[in-house]
Length: 188
Image: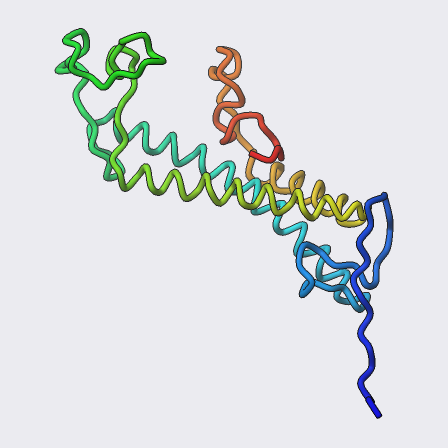
């Protein structure tokens, strides 16, 4: 005689729902079995939304910090170069078929040292991963989790988007100083 109590299975809904118990979020192991677990899951999703916005702003600030360091000739550990000694026009810069034969220097592009490229790539990759993860949360079609995702992103934008670069916005360069452009919570 088997005395084990069968555990409820995850509910998978492809329609709008407000289920609380026996809902699984992304993984079978993230199975909501109690109201407490539901509230903790909502808080976790809100925090993931806030983290997503933080990473977007971090990427923008990292780019500003790196650009300032490269422009100044090495601030922030970056190796900059003096533009007065640029080889623009000599044809020695890196070229790309998409650039019509123009060198990177002629286009005003500055090479980024590998360490900083890796750091930028890690922040970008983290942002992409988190955006897809939150998309999967959204795809539970659960109204509570959808609200938690949007609320977390909104709260994060409020907390971390307290400044803008007015000149960049009016000059048509996007959202400027708030970090990451104006993509919002798109997949990436």
